[in-house]
Length: 340
Image 1 (spheres, rainbow, N blue to C red):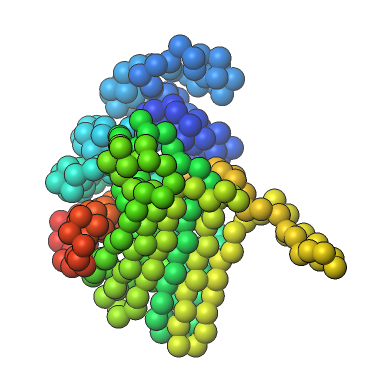
Image 2: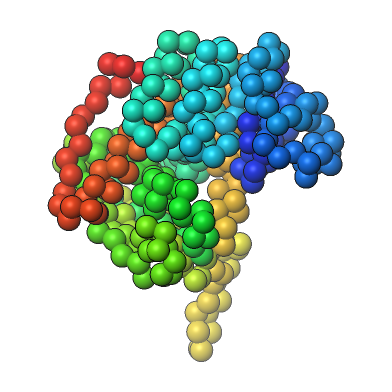
């Protein structure tokens, strides 16, 4: 059995998904669309893409295409999801679904009405280390969870132009950590308190955002969470996590090029963390598309649903509100089966 797919958006992440999908035997990548395709022609030939177009509607109207990957800018996601659902296509969409909870809700309603699958691209869920931590929590290895601590720091900030269209640090960067908090803890966030500053680049403040943040979370199960973010960690891509419970603790350290540690009379040295997110999450990106393909081919539940997507957005919105007001923000609990 073969799954025929189309890719909407051929930027960095769209091309990465093409590479990872090409090695799955059951996948046929028929079409790729992008608003600018002149620079993609040689790449498309090399990757054996059958159709290269500027109009994504060609993909949605193609009866051979069974699933689409939405890798276009965030402000296009919700509308394309609705159109893809109406066309009967299964959908993989990069995060976030949208910048508006109302638009996201409309998109999820369309997906449910059409009976198609939607997986959201929270790739960190598929990292073997974080998945192991989640399993340990579910199996009771560390007992009742008390504290979750997530450190997530980029090696360098994006451009000011990107900041202006990104939705801000909470929606663009920390949203991965909000999803990871729910995923690892297995409990919904009920309260968010955020503090932030501009300590890295004044241009980020001029663009209306922050580059450094501490966020505290309260979970429905009574546990507490702490997330610290920075747009610049000079030593590399800093991705660490610790879960502490009444029976013990478990941690995930940074990935490095090697695990070699050199100890001498003068120093103890080991490799810096991997520098870029594509290096750090190479396997996670492969596993997320493999699991999506399996869900489509075998009619299985997706590993990261539209509900997971909107829950992370709700936490991000609450964090922004807390930053602006200086007080904790309560989140209403939403029944996953009520609407989506």
